[in-house]
Image 1 (cartoon, helix red, strand yellow):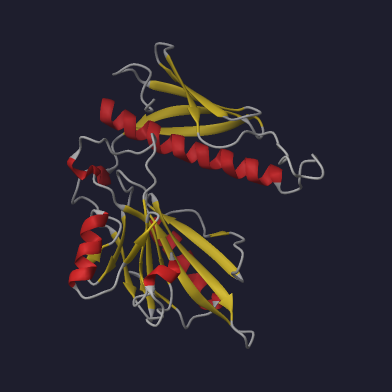
Image 2: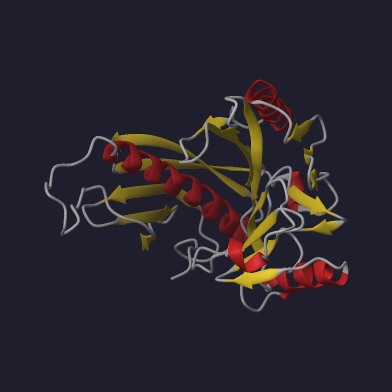
Length: 305
């Protein structure tokens, strides 16, 4: 079931997000009290111990995971409700969320506003990140270099957030990294992972990027390398262009790897939440995520897969 207004042309006024023991659901209520209810992806709020677990006690990290999953679902609903409202009514829908009972019961009140100027091509320039193998990434206001340490990289991400008006960079724990932070740009994101060298010094060792399908937000985040729009052009075209340029590309399990460039690309995961429709011309599969590391041309592409 696709996410949509309860009835075409109806104005959404409330969104209810409900986390149960085994999963999450939402209800979208319109101005005529029509309701659309659907199941949401992901686990529920109750800890279910694996069969082989020695104890069924809820681990200390579980509440944080539930809270993070609920926040991700609210963001997902923000995007899909406003997209559908724009398609149906030509306006945006902003949702103000209130916790009724944390972590699993939330109510969102919907306010309509004028369309975002970036909805119309050419009105808002994209935010372009130029990937430079062996060096890092070049941003409009600064560079993210593999030679930089966290003391240089984190202020760059803070500057990105200030420039595009997004939240401050978020810190996450990811195994293998001494530090990882990310910042939202439009509906995409830029992430930076630092690692500790054998001498104890920390340096940027990976630059990440992601952008979901559909409208890219304001500003729209673009990643380019050798003039190729990596997450905007159809994935098959991106692979063909790189091969025409003489790069070796390994493909397997929804991933394409260019070891000579240190570049990995992941296909979008098909989902009922996709903003693309199968009959649209731009619905051809695209890459949804990427990673750039210092290249190692000696390694064959299949060893990355």
